[in-house]
Length: 123
Image (cartoon, rainbow, N blue to C red):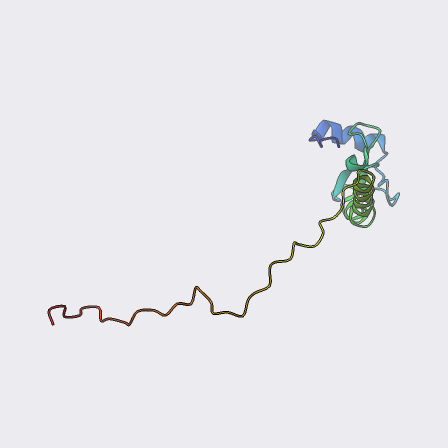
């Protein structure tokens, strides 16, 4: 998986102009003052690259919805498939403990009788 790098303001402007100011998810124009993000067309976790061709612009709302409903499930599925192909399985049941015996509890021994805090010891 590639590491995400920070995108400078100059790069953000170039990406915005290259995409014609249109959200690549809903195809609507992004107007001045509207919140938008730089989005990866193919997610980094799915072997997408962090270069100009993979970087698109999207409305912040569109981007979050797309990430939650499309990208995250696809990434999770790819991880499950990779683990299955490598033979990695989920953790099984815990090893059962020895059953408790019905005898008296050894940690419940009788306590010595209570004594007063300032007891007269000379008696």
